[in-house]
Image (cartoon, rainbow, N blue to C red; front, side, top):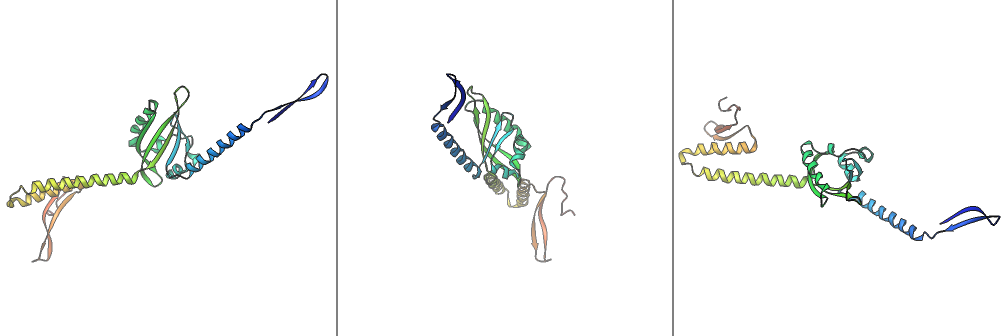
Length: 231
């Protein structure tokens, strides 16, 4: 780099030139630019969500995957608070979890629901606080992932396990009834299964070959639900 300045020296006009070797600076700038391009390429093409927020919860950076999730443009999201995107039932837990970023180790994991473009989705976040030279939080970097399918699978597994436990409990109780009280055991089973399924009523139909029709054999109705048999 050359810097020059006109001046008068010994009564004559002259030009003062300063020459600085900036080869190392240019190499560093080139390396930084290449690094930023690689980072941007990585962020733009990964499925994970990447955001940066300030200490007030306003979005400073959003990855294309984050924009796609909510069906919004980058310019529409930047500067907005992220909390309104979180399901209202998860906002308190999210606020409490985020508060831990102001304490060592300044890293948290949290799961939350959001109302995305395709409906309600579950997201898992690993958030890290950015600290200044005095150790104060200046921003937060979050890397998230859609875990909706995992959550649905966990819910289905819990439902199946609960149903298996219920059937085992019904079976254990049913075998205790004497033969003359079989219908009592059936009503108990219908009630427990009906409540588990959130049903209004449950019944067993018996085929009557002499009249060629089905007949209600045993029925259970939730409170306030009229009996079909009575009708």
